[in-house]
Amino acid sequence: MKNELTVPDHFPDLKEEDLIAAAKRRETYSLARDIQAKEFNEAIVSRLAKNKEKEEEDKKQFKCKKCGKDFDISISEMDDKVICPHCKELSEI
Image 1 (tube, rainbow, N blue to C red):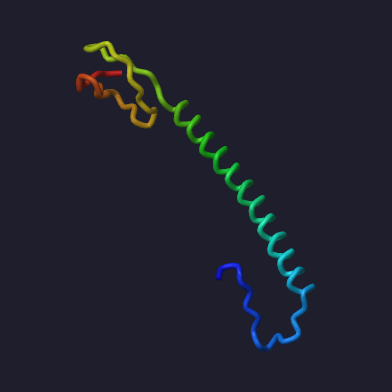
Image 2 (image 1 turned 60 degrees about the vertical axis):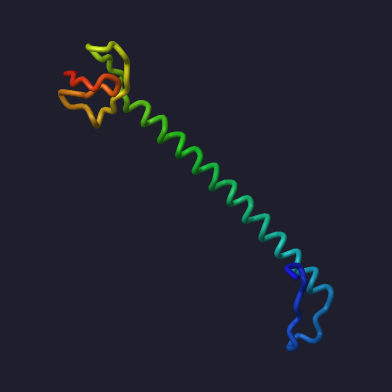
């Protein structure tokens, strides 16, 4: 039923050439949309990759003085003190 064509009564002289032309237009349109979607997807992927790189650049390694484990802190979180996620110790930067 999805692929069936229904021809309205007010188009009694519909020709086979018209049906072929309509199918060709649909195919051309769908190919153009596929190409556009691929370009948009590539743009989104590259933007997400850039955002991830920026987030990684914004992080700073910090070593806890109590437990000695390294952890990341973002530059936006940096105050004078940070809390170690491992031992929950408050440390100064």
